Amino acid sequence: MSRTTYVQVRRADGTFDLVEKGSMPAPEYADSGALWGDLGYRETKGPAGEDLSTRTKHREFMRSRGLTTADDFSGEWAKAAKERDDFHRTGGDHKVRREHIERAIYEAGNRR
Image 1 (spheres, rainbow, N blue to C red):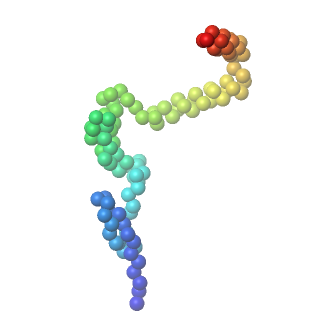
Image 2 (image 1 turned 90 degrees about the horizontal axis):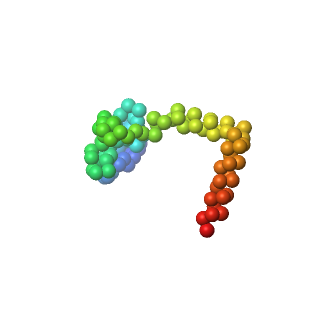
Image 3 (image 1 turned 90 degrees about the vertical axis):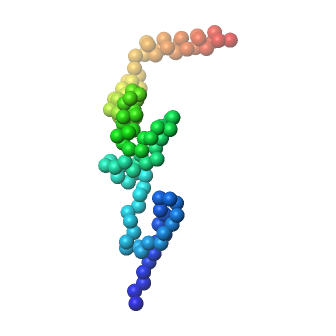
């Protein structure tokens, strides 16, 4: 006599089913297929309720408004981080830094 194990699986509508463990469907996580599917865009809406439920719709929405996503700047951020590190490691231009500090102190003292 063999035993069968059942697992409770949530459906898309929020209800649950008992499914035999060996025949369970693959779970649908938010990042499942993020590189090749539109699952991450499911039920996505724009600020005014626009339907952005697919990657194509989202891309077109962003393009039409002149917007972009943060991943477009990954090279820029790495470059800026290197420049900041170099500046802090070498001390930067001491004359300019001193002038900025003197101006900030002067302006802070004259706010009263």
